[in-house]
Length: 296
Image (cartoon, rainbow, N blue to C red):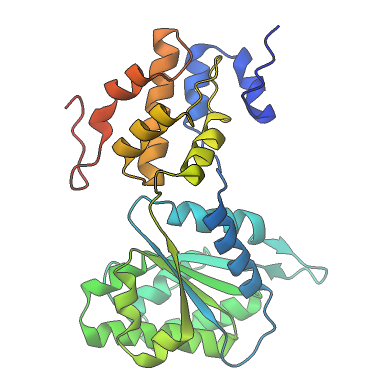
């Protein structure tokens, strides 16, 4: 009986499934850890555990589109942000993960946060009333960190509107004595520079694209352990690693999709192993100014 030593023990059970079921398993979300992600998770854990003080430190996580930023903060939410009820029967929400409004607008920011509480609100209310509701709920639920994803969206507004939103975040940080984590593309750094006070409050952590090196090979080895293929592919071998890096351009989101498509092809063709020929067949997945044509 096959032992599948090349696979993670959690994946071995999937090998008893049909080909179609194994392909379905690959589409399930799965966390692949790596050094920089672990470092940022540790920084966020440190912020979460900081004693409250008037000027809490904040963090901005930046990286290219599709390079794992949202996956990272959702992983942090899974690890540290589970809601519960305390011994006094009070609801506790350690982390609130909201999305920045599509353009810089203070009222839209408060509405986005209120949506995460599943609470009634009136979009027609004045900004001050919505602000009060946000602060009241965050205190009542003992929120210890606010994460704002897609922070670069604020660049769609005027400089004045950007300052208003950043001032609103500063007020929440000061009033609640909690750290704020922003997440966005590298352009999000420009939002901080609408006011020197904002820039001084945020440390910046970057998720860079991958170089073709040993760290990238280790990442490929980790990916291979969660792909339910019967035969080892040795993705970390120089020839395969080079081709995978060339097509994905070192972007972890592109790499993930490429490997899933290659693994599906390997199952469909019966080899159950990702080969150079299969990777070449899937090179249409190479990004072209953010656009990929099917069957190109």
